[in-house]
Image (cartoon, rainbow, N blue to C red):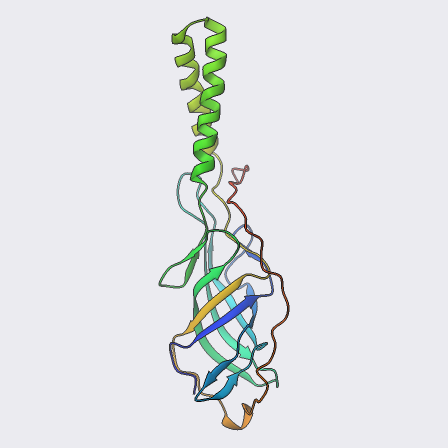
Amino acid sequence: MVPSGTRLPLILHNAVTTRNAKPGDPIYLETLFPVVIDNRILIPAGTYVQGEIQEARRPGKVKGTGEIRMRLNSMILPNGYAVDFNAIPTNAGTGGNEATDKEGNIHGDTDKGDDVGTIVKTTGIGAGVGGIATQSAKGAGIGAGAGAAVGLAAVLLTRGPELELPRGTTVDVVLDRTVYLDASRVNFTDPGRASALPGPPSREPTRSRSPF
């Protein structure tokens, strides 16, 4: 018996992004560390885990982050023993600043710093152009206002950063119900070994330059 609340550290084999993910898309993962209950290996490292995307939402143009809701519902142990179960993510190491809420939804990052930079940069350019054109502080002020408006429009007309789960993302999940295993099928003495997948590199959120 693997009790409810047991955590499974996993690694993702197929990349997922809100740019094209849709409900029903499969998700393939693998356990990174063996699960030991009462000094007995029940789920070795390298056990395959499969799930599916239940909802994928792209980031908004004005507010809102990308969001993916997934459900993990089956696993195949190294000896071929297949088991149904239910689990939701509690954490995801994506290389960015994504976060997971208590319902298991994974939320993408924002790029507020980049948005501010866009507005500040265009404000400065507008101020310079206005000042040169009118040779006055008033002209610089008008130019700054126009530049800020252009920068704000650029932010409002483009989407926020897509939620990216690259191959190699680590995902911690927790079982939300007890899993019963056939004792005759889980006589493992080897802790197993997970595939050597490189983790995703650290990355900054990037606002999509396309409004679509």
